Length: 315
Image (spheres, rainbow, N blue to C red):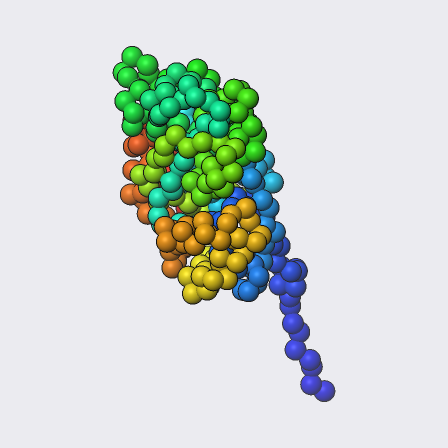
């Protein structure tokens, strides 16, 4: 009698793949992520973080999310800080947006004493969280304006950093006087300029590509990298391709599901560029970011993680 072949299966061969928990900012930049999930089967639980990158850093370190898609300066500052503990909790693994970010500088609609960027020196800056992009860019602005001097050390020339968590709280704060100004992405702010709730004082562009993808050190901290990351990049690449090839659909989604007008959505599309391949991070971009943040007083030479150590190689 012929014997039947024996099939040996490991538990991981029959168990379904656990979806990645991906933190993201629920703004217009998230549209390709939506397309990757809707059309291409991105195996992920998408977790919104309206308060931004700083909150995602906390969540990664707490083990609440596996991946974060957020602002370059926030991720780099989080790993380059002199008081970094342990392994930092995450590593840079991909590039989500190639173009710089335009940060609008806003104050309250009825703050006549604030007439220009120069008026903000010595004021109270509202930020989402300490360590967030809105916090980091306050130092970059101060450096660009020449407000940082050798005698001031790493202390920015503001009276206070007021942590307010959400964009809504920031808008309220500059009208009540709790904060004098805050910085947020231009098109997200524009709707509230148009309504008269807040007033634009100026703007500043990041001197680096604006969005990066990070993974927890549980997934990408050692020699081996979780295979789910490769699938993530594959699906995001399809999502960004769909975005580029279906601009009208993108406009409809942004103007109906998110907090933007159709006109602003169309204008934004002319300013943003997503990479064809999201996997990988250019080390020179990270080095430039670190250098600017050190010059601005956010990071200090010889403290925190060096640029090359912030990047994990997925392959």
